[in-house]
Image 1 (tube, rainbow, N blue to C red):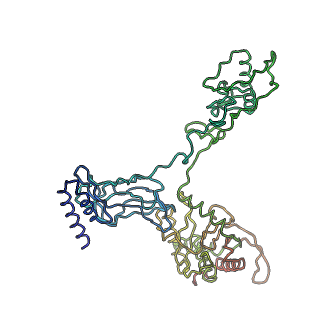
Image 2: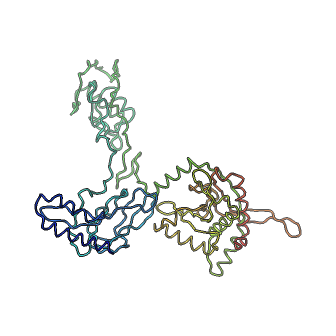
Length: 515
């Protein structure tokens, strides 16, 4: 509070002195006085004796430890709105794909928004907006000269010329005809060979094929027109000294004895395929570009890192889940709704407690043993895959796990997960059984050491022994799980021991209540 009073007193004194100082010889004094506004305030610039309103800079700071840039999703305050410390100013999408809130740290009025909604790849430290003190004229805020705006995405990479002429460079001597717009013509292979062999301009050929394709017949018709003298000379064609004209045959056209070398404009295919045109039928070879979202770029980077740096080892086992399905039905009678995946998460947590050597992460130099058992669950959203974390899952009951999983899944699909709700974790469970997948392998989520891929249940016939010792065939519901483990810290023997305990726990769900 005292600091705020001193700053306000200093600012008021500066205004009085500066307002009465009109001499250009006082620039040094002005510069010294303006420094009193503090690090968070813009120095006031003079324009014809009038001074702008000082402001507080609102910059983009790191919402996550690994954040390098972000996207401005939406401003929740508009220019002229009053702002209190702690108020949410705008929504920011981090480069990890999560939506976070940018809060104000000062009281005042939002005077100027410099980075608008929808701005992409805003670097850390970029000036987003300006804030002035309450009671001041926010319309007269002094905008920093170097504030600028977020540079728009370039349509072309830097250094690439607007056009890339096909053929020899301008400095090379011209030995053949050069047709600047040759890549606009569509030719069949036979027509391309005929026109190139005779040195003819394809832009002067009237196409008769589908979608403007120049066919072999069109090329031969062009040759016949030139022989009869009815062809029109090509326009805008720069010619080098023409070689002696070969004798023209009087009968059917034939290939000259000396065939000139194919011109460098021998109709190469376009460097990039043609884009599809909205509202028109798709043509062969067309495509549509779909830019990757921020979260999908992060997923691509993480998956590539995992598969190229982590030695994956895979171990599978089948489990009988008849008792799990029966217990689930019994709980439903008491209006307790839990999923099979909730039992799986609980069984994984209990197994990690029994086999703590699997509850590890790779630290870069070795295994780091974790005290807390935090299970990441893979959730598919429209924006990509995210793995929120059920903290201390071994100490939670199945009903608590179910409630946490539902809440985290909803926040994941709404893009409202907090960083602490998806960062970390010691083990991941990925279940595709609801999609009809019987079994699959998953990619490890570094620095975690393991991920369990869960397939769907399926009926199987098995032989069981009755109490009297006789055998009978019965049907059971089986489920296959595959453990992907980091071979650097979880070897095959340890992975097998983990799956053996997991099978015992999931096939006897009453054991889960003991933990």
